Length: 352
Image 1: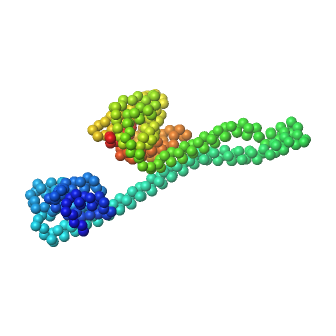
Image 2: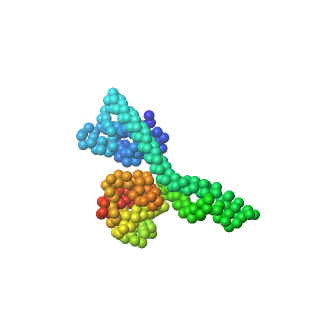
Image 3: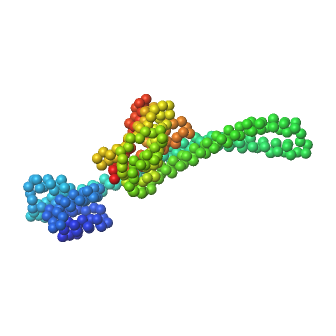
């Protein structure tokens, strides 16, 4: 137990305290910071900490007690204090703290389980996506290996002292080396495409796994959108939209969203970006009049490696990456779409 002469001293102790679990017995009237005000400050600054607050007051009228509880107190005792009642109420506080600790442990276990499921899904998706290009690259290399085994015979025929055009032609014909010569360019080109696809998948995974902290600098979102929006995108931006965040991550997020919108209108349509401030929030709407998204696909849009593009035209990490960036900025990312009508992606975040 610790005793303090005033609310400010207790507040300083809470800030510096290593422990997170407390039962606070607060007098309503304290010289520098009264009990209800300290309650409000504790609840505002430490909403997740298991702190049980009991107000001690000589006021027994209902209105005062309601004000104390609304300020953040969990319980109260009236003066003069009955020791047995105080012990009983503190026992309730200990039970509440123990319950809070148990819930925190359950939530932590749940979060670990969810992360493991996410990692498993990501690993499964990555294995599937990488396996496809690796399979045809391996098939091409197997073919090249088999055909290259015939080359020494051709070299011997060419370098032989008894070499003739007919003997060389016979080796070429018997070994079907002409097919290797005809297919070599296609085989190597296809293999390079496969290797590049694997590189893109790995690069996407590295970006997806990027959990570095935000730089927390003030960013003019209006200017950023003007800089990175493709020329074909129409902009309707409120000036001086400021937020605190990471410039590079926001560029990655909006670039992915612009890429999806432009892909949706390849067969015709337009993309409009509207950004405005609503009270203390900034909202950015990226609307396309493209093909839209079928109902059965909507629940999978943010799943890693889910893509509606043909093989080789998208890794399927863009929206997953964008959602992670939005959340790291304390914002949200939602999608509203109707097939044949178009899609609107909405980003909301706190304004600076």
